[in-house]
Length: 306
Length: 152
Ligand SMILES: [Zn+2]
Image 1 (tube, chains in turn orange, red):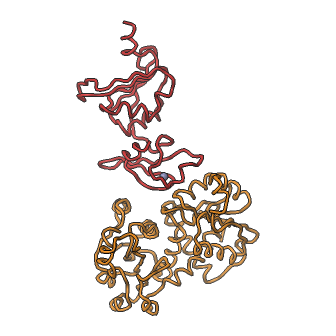
Image 2 (cartoon, chains in turn blue, yellow; image 1 turned 180 degrees about the vertical axis):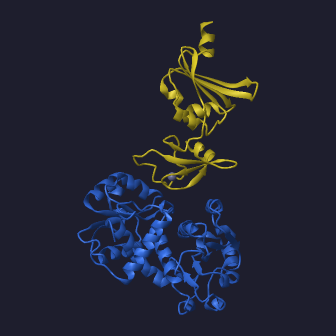
Image 3 (cartoon, rainbow over the protein chains, first blue to last red; image 1 turned 135 degrees about the horizontal axis):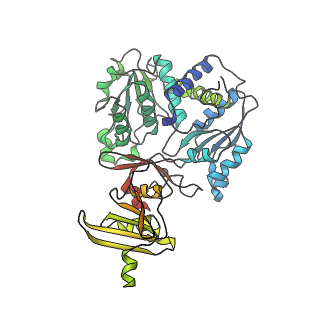
């Protein structure tokens, strides 16, 4: 029997069942420990970046090549026919007729969903505006499973910009299927949006809004840091909150031994450099795991069984 | 006398009655009823025993479908929609909120891909305690129905 993701579009985290999330995570783990260079043999993947994102693109293209596949595409859509006024629908019809799957990133929300309606082959969303970035969430889940041994009954704190951080929104959506509990640590102006809190309420997920990063550290398994962008505040406001959402090594003195610090990267100054050498730092391994999570997804979408 | 009769009775068509006063013109334009080319009669601020004041729309020769009637439920859940044939009411639509709504409203998110591409807008409709929410299938943003309706 074909795996449930075979020939499916990968657009948005809420589309995934719990079993599908677990399948990707477990497949990523297997590919990390037993690499396969044959799963995309003779497959050609379109890598279509209508907006540049070097990190995501390199991670995807590495994943394809490690699995023995080939890549065509573009790194910056500003140079393509989209600029001449071609609709995304037309662009995708053409690209999908050349390839076995299309990985795409686009500055507009909903672009991947729309593309999937016009594509002859599976579309994998590599980020659509401020909406979804499902492969980031899958690599986060893989990293959490890898470090905690489970996705279930964990306690996580999300810190920083929770308002605009789509990474954080998708990860809470995904983890709400695994009976986890959350602490949200952010300045008031960057608090978790109401619609996410309402969704969590509906699912009966437990979460607490807290002010102090230090108080919550001893109680959590995962500390998920994000960047608070200076541009979102005026100078006086920023001075008030500056430093409140920065993690230093000394703050981890009472942390649980299994606590891992994650960050979608790039970091600026929200994680002090002295955290890097603690056993809790895991953000660089998390970035590396992005390749395995993307390998897992590509392998599942393009092979009946993996 | 012939004139009076035209306004009051409809031989063939649809009567949308018991619209809250002030909604008549909005619904006329949202559902593009004036663009049908058929004769449309609109009554505004008519007195109603139950509602105080109401608006009413009569469209000749067009029978509103179940789907269209349900879309109306978003704005006027207590409206009545009667389809008329030969001066008789042949169908009274029971208005129910639709589960999805396609093509009537533009997505309020200006950065949503649904603008400028060959697709119709598409929303999932979700009633909540005090409001009705609409979630765009494309950008996945959730809006209050009034915000969605104002955009068009
Ligand atoms: Zn939209």
